Amino acid sequence: MENKQKNERDFKMEEEQKDLSNNSAQEDALEELEKLKMIEKAQLEKITKLRGQISNQEMLIEKIKRENIIIKEKSRKMIANSRESEYEMALRLSQLDVARAGGQKGLNEAEIDNLPIFSVDIDTPCCVCKKIIPQDHIVKSLPFCGHMAHQPCIDNWLISNKVCPECSTPVQEE
Ligand SMILES: [Zn+2]
Ligand SMILES: [Zn+2]
Image 1 (cartoon, protein in one colour):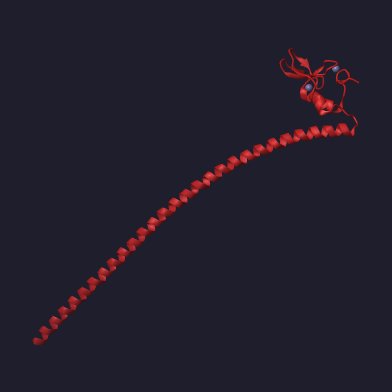
Image 2 (cartoon, helix red, strand yellow; image 1 turned 120 degrees about the vertical axis):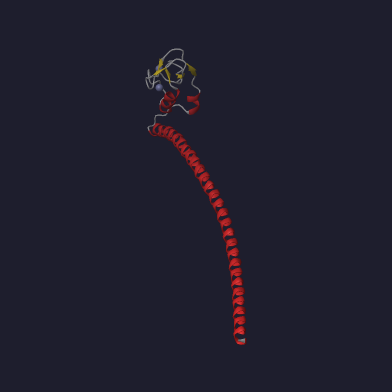
């Protein structure tokens, strides 16, 4: 009888100890869970921060792309413009070369520039290209015959000629 009581008491104590250790295991698990929650929170914050950085960089990339398009457009225009003026210059130089190679020396640049320029008060044909120069447009006239021409037309003609293209009157005094 005494033994039985003792056994019961032991059993009770064992049960209490089991409960205690169960409790402490549960506390450990809760603590672990708290730690994991903190880690998760910190990682979510990092992700949010990284997303912010990524969208900033995407905006920067978009901005750079737009700037690139503008720069490309500008340089395309600059290239087109310089090609145009290069072409005009090459044309004038080649006309000078042809004139000199052919031995047909025309007027020099200063003599060409000194010819009178004025605006016409009636429609007048250009003596070089034969097209009509409309009223109020600028013409260059030849001093001895008075024939008129577009300025670029007569300038190009006089690089290799000293006479009027219309009537062959000399442009300069002999
Ligand atoms: Zn002309
Ligand atoms: Zn003439």
